[in-house]
Image (tube, rainbow over all chains, first blue to last red; front, side, top):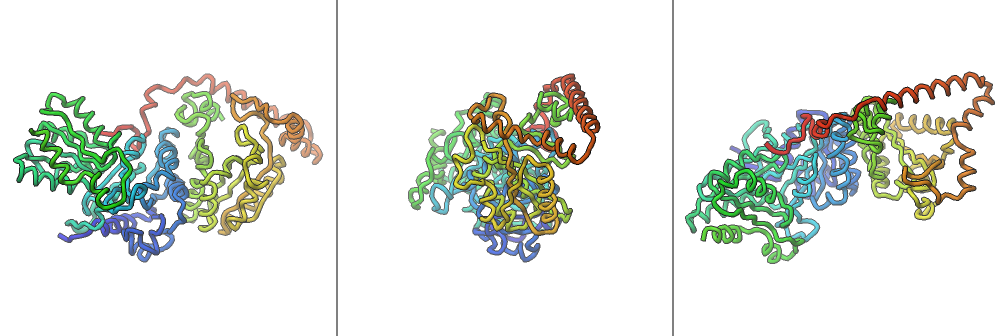
Length: 325
Length: 250
């Protein structure tokens, strides 16, 4: 199987959908001529032309407003918001307009928009270019929320998002862009709302998202080899819809739940999963649930400071081991 | 008409079956892509509808109406710039009625004509029209629509008009000076246009017949909307997603 970077998977996923459907258009800052500031969209302008791949001014409200108006009138736009932090400057269009239009009009309009955005820390960009804001999106009724952790998932979930008739926030993790993974040949189409079990264990279930997935896997290896703890790892992949069936099944199987979240502490996605587990499978739990998150802080920039606040493999192992003492 | 009135009253017969309310009137089948309750948000959305028309080659034009208050929000400027750069078939119409909500637009805006004076910043003509003159508005509409259809890009029209009452049901509008209200009420476009039609030798009886007919239709629609039941409660749990439901988990 071919190895592809997470970065190249983005362009391949967009190209796959643009080649299939003329109504798919793509807009954003520096995405066309420059090929994207993270070099995720190179070659698309050359292949699909300036009518379908459009550079925009630095105007996030105009980008998403244009995507919304186009979606309401027959197109299927993919809009890029360069850094997910910038969603704050166009949140009106996301949370008040796109998310609610179908509901408010009792189904008169359909909103097939995908908002791709580079999310998360690891690049030492500081507090306004490093946030994990998937939980902002998760708490707005009317938005679907996806965050892939592998190149194959980038392609498959992006295709699923483009084909979905509802607005989807597609969170790419900027520290994963350089990572590689196997990608099957041909057209890849995945399914929104499906978690993936990456490793099966018997003592504890780790639920992780995006860049926390490889850390959870590494932590699971160390838990096994150094502490004799056998961990299941579930890649949550989709926050809305949330695959509670898979999550609850895997938590029941081990009797313990740990969420590994990059977002700051309060109202992180893991809190919702813990709450569902506490309510629905309380008597299957062998111990208290544990949430491992970034502390409730903005992200600092210096290498050692950023490393000190993010959930690292060391910290994940340490916090889990304590619960087995 | 029944749909509009029903929506205002929160009835099942409303355009959106009572799920939208007075601030979100939408009738997609008529090309009315929504009224938007967040000031200025719809300008970029209209640009998007225009972009779609341009892409699909439909010769459609997006027309976007907003108040003077919208000219000071970022979305106004982002939308105008994008529409100008992409030469989008969209006509932006600012209805300048002198008041945003309670504050006069002139008290908080750096230029005297809040829309027209900004047009040059986006390479557009400064267009001011008497918004209470039906024929003048029609002429500007024809000109700007033709420009959009010819692929020459967007227009920004500032229509000078007046708000005859308060901003909302809770606002009697007492901050408007009495002489100002009086002067503008004399320029109410409906009686003014009626007078013009009489001067053009349209018989009074013909106008009275149209007015009577319209009144009857409005009364009938009002009555029909009143008779409509409130929407069924189950409706609150539908149409979040395109599958008709609102499930967020399995």
